[in-house]
Image: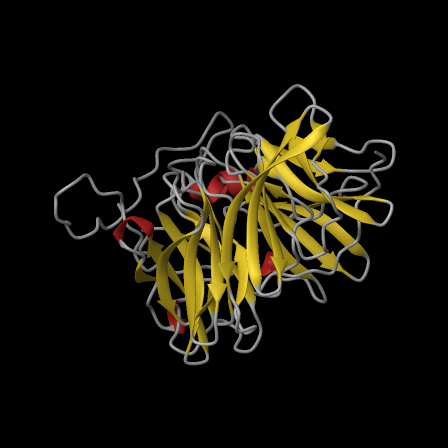
Length: 396
């Protein structure tokens, strides 16, 4: 089977951000995408954790539709989500010698036509997969893989939800952007407490505040809000559990461009402002990559590798950015970029020596949840980032 180069796509997520060219598992070992052979689409699994990446085609009995979703699982299988006659069908695909094995998981019925169901980003651990079914007035959370009896209903959330960001490495705390009363606010859904919903991001009463990306190690959050510029979204950052307000750096504003964060450097437990963040820039001249740290006042702009599966990538803890790409000559490639070192001006302003950071006070701990019955060890629970008036907003 001949693999063609990446297909240009204008698909967007519910919040209007461009959709990535492939989906990478939370631990980074596997990825999945819809590839092309002539005019036919088929699922493809990429293995990313070996010496060299390689792809395994997983074609079914017939070509996939453009709207089919594919999702890598932690064991190397690929979850596929197809739609037929109002039914959302889920199966696990896996290679079986020269062919493709398929394990049907069941279906979720959405017969009214007004409900849209989509997969959430890969959950930590890779054993389970989740989906949101968004209706006119409420959203239903489903576990569609990893359960005992196929798709399982978990909770109903009042309002229309979009986005989806995991806040911890246990796969318990899920942040979603909920629209109610004409405004969108990020909330937390606790999967171990029956889908209990609590506020996460509240900047101003009349602002739309969304969470785009989170790093469970440092607590760094990338957010989008129109609070500092009513009617115009700005990209900002905050730290989960911090008492400081959200900040909206000027360097993240680029006229006539859409800026989308897609990866945060892990492992920076006590220094969230030093995490390298990968940004996707989309403008009239195409797409390219930016690397930025919250502690810095500038973005390092870099050309994207040829055939980049735009919006897809992952950081290593030591600051290497890995970007999957596909061309006719290299149908499965992984470009590796090193994050630029923090500039001397930033080091001096933070009181750091070239040998390393100065001692830093510990972050404010997260507020624990109320004790449940029967008592059991409870995971830290997110608290609202900021509920201060606009006058307290800080621009870096």
